[in-house]
Structures are given as structure tokens and as C-alpha cells.
Image 1 (cartoon, rainbow, N blue to C red):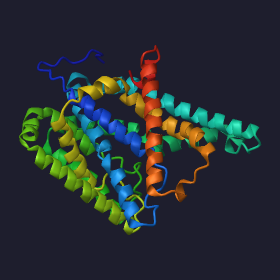
Image 2: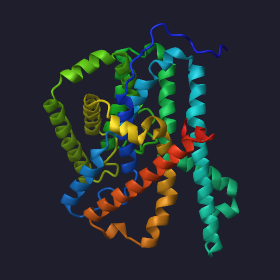
Image 3: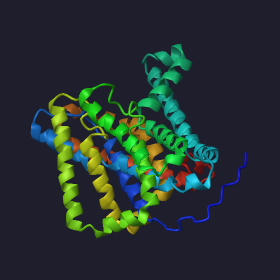
Image 4: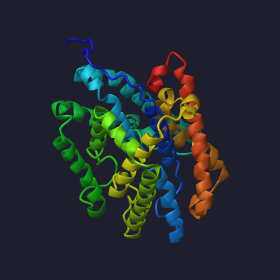
Length: 363
């Protein structure tokens, strides 16, 4: 098989500097969401639950925005490389660091158990059957933890590659949209489990929509530029509160996954917020200081370990019972956890990115 990239006669030359701004803001939202300390719908007072819903909803556009940006970036790479070449390149830049940090998390968990054992605790499965422990832990991390979305993203890319000849067909996009809406309805009906693992086809549409946006970039940007700031801000405000209302309602009827990303109201809110961020455009100060092009993937990979293994070292000695604290106290703790997690992840990603093992953060 030819290993040289296929030449494209009319490549895009736009810098698309807004991409890094959206990528950075989305990653901030993703890390913030993962730093929560209490289960959903925990508070007894409705006011506190609404405040909690509002905090969670603020950055709930982040995951869909990330898939939209991902699709936007890969559009012309589909033309430049064969499917095999593209997936091979993705393995080196994505799967290899992804596997490294999964193994790192497992090894840190093993180390934690050995330290606990040295203090008198039981070894459990690690001591009885290490291989089974490794397999079960690896499976749990891949399917349940935020690392799942890396695999989900690659599955979505593979689906688009398989249907490459239909990539710009609106009917193909409609089919993908129906898959996403199935998960929106399923939140209420419960036909299948509503965990993010079961939504394996739920995010393909947003990756496709990003591809479509890239293809018709000039036309779409003209529409966004022609839309007044008042209209787009009003839409963001209205859709935000509709999304808060839906999650509050889902909580009230006992739906456990009330903040599911694929709620219909959150889909609309996410698309409006994406349009708003496009209208804002490039934020040079953010790109200059937070270096999203260099650090975003590294932050995603590292923040999982910081939350899982690092934050307990800080908060467990404090012996705080989050379930007994009020919404304002837990919100303050959420922000502290976020600042610690994002800061450590950022500086570690930057430091690693300057070494010979920069492949560990996808560089």
C-alpha cells in the first residue's frame, strides 16, 4: 500500500485560529464537570438543586463542541490521507498516549493498594489474582471513566471513514441525527442504559456536523456574522434556562441521568453556544497563555489521574463530608478542585511536551 499522503489540489489555507479558543474553553468545561463532589439531585431544597443544575449546565456544551471542532479539523485530512493512513496516524498520536495513561492509572491504583496493605488492609483481588484485577480495572477505566470518550471519538471517526462517499450527503447527516435523538428520547423511556458507554453512536452526528461546517465554512460564518449579538446572546440565555428546566424536571421524576449530554435541550444549547463562540472568534490572550494546541489533549489525559489519585491526597486528610455541606460550600470546593486539577494538568502537559517523551501528551 502506498504510504505517501494523497495530494490535494485545492487545500484550505485558512488559519482557523478560533479553533484553539473553542478547544480550550471546552476543555475547561470538561475538567470542571469532572470535579464534582456530590451526586446529582442530592439537595433537599429545590432552590439548591436549581443552583446545582445551573452550575453544571453552564459548561455542558463542552462535549458536543469538542466533537464539532474535531469534525471541523479532520475534514480535509480525509482527503489528504487514505483511511488506513489516517487511522495509523491517529494510533500514534491518540491511542498510544491514551493507553499509556490508562496503564499509569492502573499502576498508581496498584501502588495505592500495596501502601494500604503495608498499613494492615487486605490486598483483595490484587493479591489473589492480579491478572483478573488488571483486566477488570482496565475494562472499567475504558468503559466508565472519561477515557471512554477517546475511544468513542475514534469509533465515530471510523464510522465517517466507512461512509466517506456519503460524507456531504444531508440524508446521511439526518440518519446520524436520528441516532442522536434516539438517546435523547431514551433518557425518558429507558429502553437501554443511559450511561455514556451505551451512547456509542450518539456523538457521530456532531463529528459529521463539524465536517459539514468545514466544507461550507464561508456560508455558515456569513450567517453567524450577520446575526446580531442581541439575538445570539438571547438564544444562549433562553436555551440555557430551558436546559436547566429539563434537567430539573428529570430530577423531579427520578431520572438518574438528568444531566445527560444528549438531552434535547442541551443539544440545542450546545449548538447555540458553539455559534456564540464562533462569533466571539479567536481569543489571543487565551491562546497565548493556555497554549491549547500544545496542551489540550495532554490536559484531558492527565486530569483523570489528578482527580482519581491526586485530589484524594489533598481532601481525604480534611475529612470533609460533602453530603452534609450546602450548595455554596460544595460549589467552592468544586472550584478549588477544578483549579488544582486544571493547573497541575496544564503544567504537566506543558512540561512533558518539551521533552523527548512528548508523545505521551499527543505531540
